Length: 246
Image 1 (tube, rainbow, N blue to C red):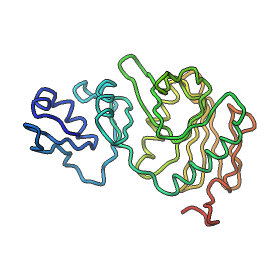
Image 2 (image 1 turned 180 degrees about the horizontal axis):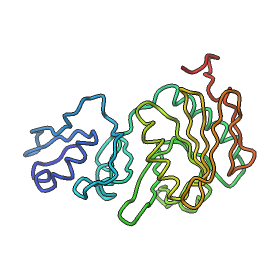
Image 3 (image 1 turned 180 degrees about the vertical axis):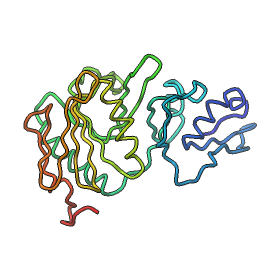
């Protein structure tokens, strides 16, 4: 992102938040690159997985600031409870699981009113008036297509969300996103773990976890919200080459 020096001076706090999230800020002067604002933490910590129970407003990234960032950046971000998360590229095992699930979901939902979609696709969820979050689930099912506006932006709440764990995102998926989906009205949440070859299905109700089931080995994952929707784990975690995922 390139920012004129006067703009940086007038809004330094905003651009410091962006730099902390992993965005490279190039400072320009008289139309030329003059300096660079980057985070000084180790490069292997691109994804911010830590969050604080209390965040001063000076550190809180607002929804408006998030929109300003994504309009200018080529990177993908999520915003949860005022924290920006830089979305790293997923692994092969991650994408294999997403692809297998999408193929099965598309077949099952064909001709039905609900539709499955994959990331990147923004889902905006309001936890409070001053806490608007934006996430990009690996897979989601929406049954309220009337909440897609003329620009193709979705403003509803998915009925079912799937997140496939990876090393860089597991902490966020298991904590921050579980709470977000639960509080904001998602009915069902699947957490897929390629490493342990398990799937945990959470059923939410009235802002709490109504039930959950952990599927493993030769189980078939079954949806509670959509009766008849199921995926055998033996097929979900098997690579196309016939070798099991690592």
